[in-house]
Length: 344
Image (tube, rainbow, N blue to C red; front, side):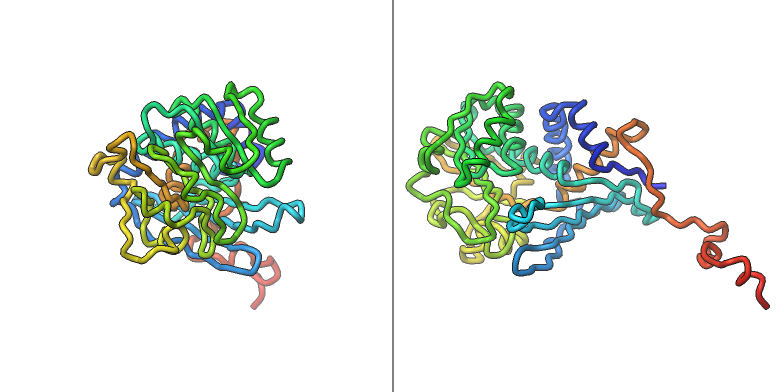
């Protein structure tokens, strides 16, 4: 049997534990994994692109446990009453090759993405940051806001989306969050006075939702919407003014904001900052960018954390994924009919 956390169990676990509590735990788990970043296998995800989206596999291992996530990204899906992103993950024992956890990863990925953003902002944003601007109020937005509130003490959120219903949704969901919410009239209005700007739009296009003139000294930009070739959100001149931090540079060169820059444009590895091997923000007036595309080590960490949290609880069930014939070499015995078994 393989431990299984399906969607109903995931929802129940999150609502009982509390989103902010989980986010703070996940930040700690991510910090531990980033500190030993070089112990993991590191390779860009395997992507299959189509006209309307992409399907990806994101694998990694630390030599003891292996994990992968299946994830898609199809911006057209909401027009068909479907989710833009779906995902599931597997966590496995390297020694035997047996999976030990199978889990839903729509909700879990939203949590790990928000926790990663907050982990980076703890080192890259100004210590006195109080105001977050969100450009894009889709599926990620509430998780991002709560992560910044829990980890950095953000008290105000300024929101903008081209879809008024998306902003309605955010305001409705965050009504009891304790955050002061300003519904902006434009992207420029949203970022005015913001300390941290998160861009999280869904369109699969090289769009510009944050222009150079909207960025002021001391801002930290959390760019999480650009996550595939041909999909970016920032005016490239912003990157020339900023220190740019990335997860796995070879993958970010393919999928992140820096895909539009020369291959030798300077970037800095976030893991080195988390590990204490390199500085984060050094001056109050510098501009920092976390060009985040999501990386398999973050999913590995989320799955490991989930397994630790739910094993032996009502939040996990079992799924029979592993065949177990009495004789390990006799797989056919599981399907052989009595008549066939007795035939001569």
